[in-house]
Length: 45
Image 1 (spheres, helix red, strand yellow):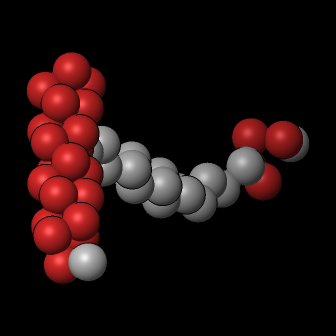
Image 2 (cartoon, rainbow, N blue to C red):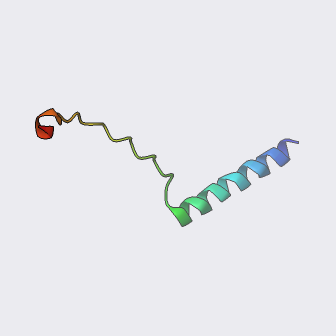
Image 3 (tube, rainbow, N blue to C red):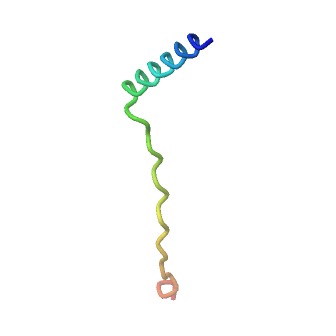
């Protein structure tokens, strides 16, 4: 059983390397923009 697990791990590692080579490294999610408070009260008058 250990032999099958070792082969499975090697296949997963190879697949990860192929995907990374084709698509580039793991994509980091873009950080959410920080809302900037705007004082609109003066402009509405």
